[in-house]
Length: 215
Image 1 (cartoon, rainbow, N blue to C red):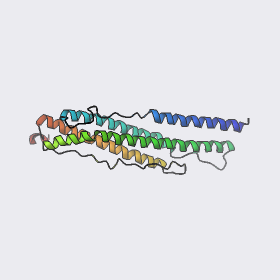
Image 2 (tube, helix red, strand yellow):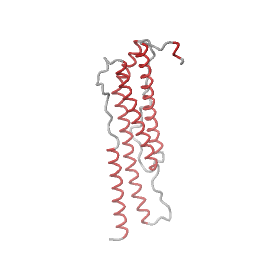
Image 3 (cartoon, rainbow, N blue to C red):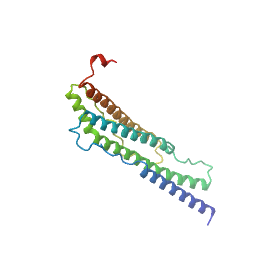
Image 4 (cartoon, rainbow, N blue to C red):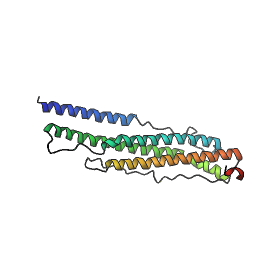
């Protein structure tokens, strides 16, 4: 076999190995997060139980936000593929071709990672939404202000254009990660605010006394 044949065979094997490693990493590094430990029906929960469930959501949302940030950082190197130069040798051109194909494959994996995180975030909030609603019901019953959660940032493109000639690929993925991260951190902040309101309710039976409101 010629040197070119050996080179191409080794390059193909290496590319396949890298693609397989990326796929295994995608499947093993993002376990699903469980729903509320209090069960599916929060209707009878008191303020303490609701605050405990919201605390669960707080940490789970921040874990997904961390995964979004990690995905963005790990994908930066895929912003562009190999560049062909006029004086490239035949071997270099072959290596570039293999690298270009691998870049597109791994871009697809990262795209699916983002979609998976989006599904997990949507599922997580859907499972805890009744907890947020129960907390606001308790506050309303005590004439206290509720806490809202906006879901407008919980939308991303269905699929990215993973072609190598899409020079905006990383910007598009990073934007999707950023929007999802914003939703997760904002909803976690809302959970924390609701927890604090519920703790006030438990302590005073309603809003904090005016003498303490500005303390």
